[in-house]
Image (cartoon, rainbow, N blue to C red; front, side):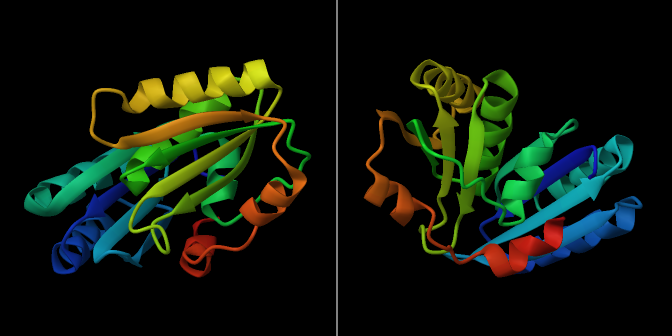
Length: 195
């Protein structure tokens, strides 16, 4: 596990590639994952030591300034968030389900990290971009009160930005809906390289 993670979301693929290159050259990061997602966006994720990731992020934001849609920096990223980004799922029974839907991948990652750190919930999954029109989805499970707390904390992190689309808590999710929610998504092949 890496103690620090940053992601920049670009609305230009060419600018994203240029910024990703600058990020890789700026500091000795432990991991870089970059690629296209729908609808025509480019993501660059870096992980490693805090100072290295900070330097790399600053370089990417500077070089890609005109094409940056959103970004997230988590100097103490929760290990379950890293697992979820790599396609991991927690197939635990769903007592209550909390869903946060965001306009950007970066906002979904920030919401997932805040929610899992701030409440006694399971981070079921984080779905990002492809097949979602570039949006992000975060799924929390647990007792109703805990899921409500996680949703409140997760949405507070992105409050004041246009990133939040909708958040909901569903008590006693139907088993057939739960089975459907745990079906595979598309960005996983690329994202598995994170861990």
